[in-house]
Amino acid sequence: MLDFEKPAIDMKNLSKSFGEHSILKDLSFEVPRNKIVTILGFSGAGKSTLLKHMLGLLSPTSGSISVLGQNLQDLDEDELREFRQNFGMLFQYAALFDSFTTYENVAFPLREFTKLKEEEIAIRVHELLSSVGLEESSYYKLPSELSGGMRKRVGLARALALNPRIMLYDEPTTGLDPITTKMVNDLIVSMAEKNKDRGMTSVIISHDVKASLSISDFIAFLDRGRIVEYLPASEFAKSENELVKRFINL
Ligand SMILES: Nc1ncnc2c1ncn2[C@@H]1O[C@H](COP(=O)(O)OP(=O)(O)OP(=O)(O)O)[C@@H](O)[C@H]1O
Ligand SMILES: [Mg+2]
Image 1 (tube, rainbow, N blue to C red):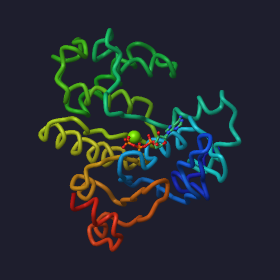
Image 2: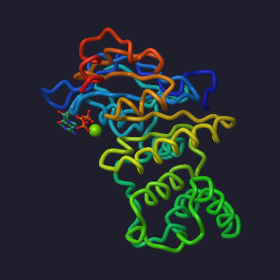
Image 3: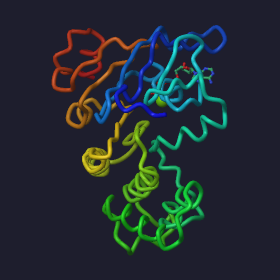
């Protein structure tokens, strides 16, 4: 059973090594519910590795991780696969199915994981696509016929299809032009707002300090496998941590 009193994600003394290489180091970290939390850090700090633990795609060498009150180590592979339906994911490359239209991409998780009828799916797909600001003219286009920004919108609509409790974003704006970057950041905030009532937590991995300061509730800084700073976004720019100061002033 999901426990809605517990934090969205709770890591306790989590360590991860690959062979001799210790990547995450005795990390304790809580993501509160219904907030937007950004994890910043230099390349190679372990951010994506951390995200994979949240999804149960990797398991810790020691320590524990609970998501929505559920200890992930207590789940077997099948249970984990089922549990992942609590997550929506948007990655750097929207990872759409190239041979599927916009409509089919968004309908895919609904067809795969729900028992909705085609008419109900149609209603839901329209709802999702209009919530990310896509017009009907793009519903029957292939990803190759869409701009980068539109592909992100489709990816986001698909990620939200199953009403995830937790949205994970791994570098959602890396490689995008400034205008598309702003659009994606605005969308992240507006999706968090729209889904607040039913409860949705957002975890973002990013290099973009300026955007993080304006869209997040909390910001963590991961340095070589350790969380060395974790503050409300409004206080993050005043951090006394030398590495954080350097990162902000880059
Ligand atoms: N499966 C693996 N086996 C061995 N080493 C790994 C594995 N996955 C990640 N690593 C190592 O762990 C370290 C952290 O990688 P990770 O991808 O988590 O960093 P990151 O903070 O996401 O970096 P970036 O900002 O470049 O995406 C790297 O040194 C990487 O080589
Ligand atoms: Mg990464």
